[in-house]
Image (cartoon, rainbow, N blue to C red; front, side, top):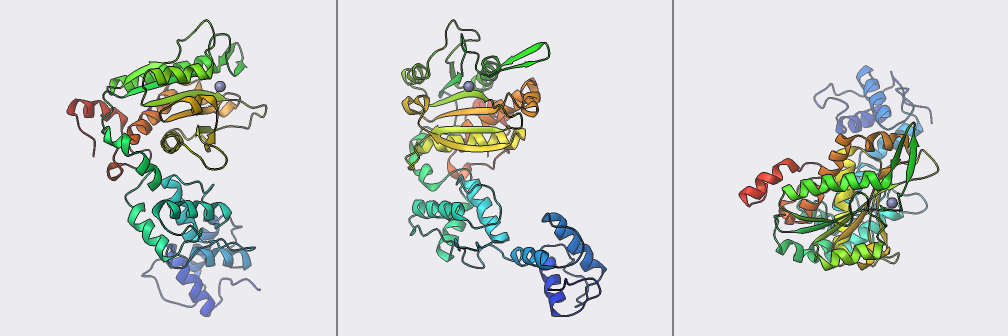
Length: 387
Ligand SMILES: [Zn+2]
C-alpha cells in the first residue's frame, strides 16, 4: 500500500483525521476537511512519536495499524485472547491498566491481549462470580465498572478474605508490626566494595528497618525488630518467623537487598507466600502488591513485580508477611540511591503507606502514591481516618 501523505485527499484522510481527533491530537473544532493538510501531518507526527514509530508524517502500513488500534475505547468491543494474531488496541491497554491497579498480574500494559491478560481477566471473573472464560464482554465490563471504581489496590477475593483485617479498624494504633532486617551477625548478605567503602546488605537493611520502626512507632504502632545492628550470630529465617508468631504480630515485613553478577540487574521486587499452582496467602499477596506499587511510585525503582514463594519465612509466619528486595546493591544505579539516606526515607514512607492502606476499608482506599504519611500522626491524635 502506498503511504497516505501530505496533499492527499479522500475518505481515508477523513478517517485518519477522525481517529487523531479522538486522540485529541487534532482540534475537535478544527476545519472539517478530507485533505491531508499541515495540521494533519503535525498530528500524525505527534502520534508516531507517542507510539515509538518512525516519525515521517505519513501513514504507511505500520502507522495505519497503530491508528486502527488506537481508535478502540474500552467497552466498545468484546476482547478475548485471539490466536495466532492477538487483539491490540487502546481498549486493551485501558483494561490492563485497570487490572494492574487492582492488583492482577497482566505483566506490562502493552495493549496486546495475550494469554497473561486473558488469565488475569479469568481470575477477576472467578472472584466476582462470573464464568471465567478470560474474555472481556459486556458482563465483565459491568463488573469492572461496578467494582473497579471502588476498589483500588486489591482484588475482590482478597478484600473478602481481609474482612478480619478491616474489622480490626483502620487506625494503626495498637497494631504490632515485626520488621525483619535480613542477615546480620556472621552473615553480611550482599557485600559490594565501593572505593574505600564497603556496602553491606545487612547494614543497609538494618538502617531501613530502624527508620521504618521510627515512622511506624510515631503512628502508634508497636514495632519489634528481629535483630539489632550487629548481632553475634545470624538468626535463621524459621526463628524469625516464630518470633513474629510469638509476638502475635499483625504484619511481618522482611527487608533485603538483591544482587546479581550482571550490574545491569536492578529494581525492587516483593515476595509473599504462595505456590506455583495458585495457592496463595490472600492478605500476604495484597500487602505485597501495595508495598511493591507504593515503592515503585514513590522511588522510581524499576518494577520487578511481586512473586509467590514458599520460603520458610513466608510459610511459617501466621500473619500477612512479605519480603521486599529493595533494589540491587550490585547495580550502580540502585546503589547510588540506596546509600542516600533521603532515598531510604522515601522507601520507608512507601512501606508505611502500604501498611496503612492494608487497614483502610475499600471504599476509603486511596490511589497509589497519594497517601501523605506525615499526616498519619495527626490521624492517630484525632483517632480517625484521613479522607
Ligand atoms: Zn538478602
